[in-house]
Amino acid sequence: MSTDHHKRRTLRIAGPEIGLIVGFGALVLVVVGLAAGVVSQSVAQQQALRESGRETRALANVVVAPLLAAYLDDRTGSAEALDQALAYGLTQGPLADVTIWQEDGYVVYSTNSAAARRRLTPPPEVAEAVRGTPTSGVVRTSAATDTPTSRPLAPSSSSGTSSGQAYVKVYVPLALPDRPPLAFGAYYEYQTVTVVTQELLSRFLPLILVPLILLQLIQIPAALSLAGRLRRKEDERAQLFTRALDVSDRERARFAADLHDGPIQELAGVGYALGAVAPAVPAPQAPMMERIQEAVRRSVESLRCLMTDLYPPDLDSGTLAQAINTLAQPLREAGVDVDLELDQLPELERETAVTLYRVTREVLANVEKHAQATHVTVTTSTDGEPAPGSGQRVRLVVTDNGVGADPRRLDRRREGHLGLRLVIDRVHNAGGRLTIDSAPGRGTRVETEMPVQP
Image (tube, rainbow, N blue to C red):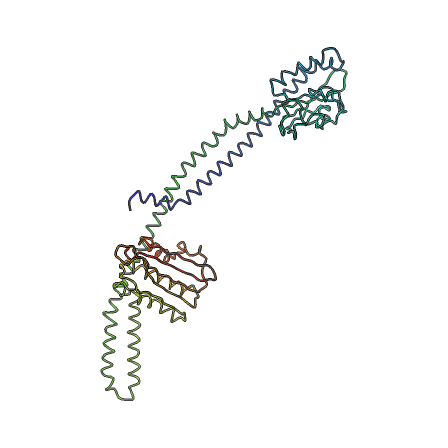
């Protein structure tokens, strides 16, 4: 296997894990970005409230207070002077509205001429400011027609005509000599909060996200490397078991040859000898001679079945029918109805024949141990053109009516059960595919499809 192919295979194997790491990292980035945005907006809002509070106190005590006494005494030009003093903040600054209240709800002054010198229902902040407690917060208008006349909490200047616009509201106490305490209310454009929020995000968000992005970029190669190592370890383990299986096959072949050339031949010779001397045995011992002959025949048959099970000689000739029939014999002896539908197969390469034999042996062994089945069907067939090199494929299907299994429990490598995993890998390595369709209570269907010429 070339290095490039191994890398592509590692990337393909590690795809879900890498996707999970990248997706989780992206989720963390989104969550951190949203959290940073919320925190920045909260910090900016608190900062805007503090600055607006300072500006409002300065505006009330430094700008408005010296002119308000003359305004309250209705001196000529006092109203124009007060309007002019607030005009710059209303037109050039963030100031949106100014209203001066008495505790009883009388509007002493307002930049909204419709509300000035009228008695309205005061907002709760008025009473607190009159008692000497400054208040601040954020308010959002619900309609373009909101004015201090209809909704005292909302500003009424021309800058607040859009529906749903937000403002920073501040109420501070305003005291004049020899007059009842007043409440000075000012509304500021919320844009100041937005500007500060953007500034904070532009400064601090890169400091948070850039290290996280770098960490993510570092993790991906590390994860790829770990996934590649894990896959290589798994491949090495599978190769070791495959080698062990090959060694086991060679040992099975040697044992089968030893059985054939040793005990089977000797017992067969004993059987022939007993058959030759049986006619000369006296009548009283004839039944015993028959029992001895029958025992020798059963022993020879058992040893031949054992020899075939160890290493079926039929595989060398490319036929599977006798080998599969032998593999099904233990199930029949256990009372399971085994139905063999074995089509005539073309001459198979030894690798294909051995692989199909191992699949059948592993599946039937699992049926015998775990399925609790009463009926098993084994079918073989071919498709494609029989011409050499045409891609003809052979199909082996084993179906049982047993208890079935949860597909998630089929891969039991962690428990040390590697038989099924090894035959699946062997089928895939030979260019075939093996699929398992099973569910609790409805049996299992194992389908193997392989090229005749791997």
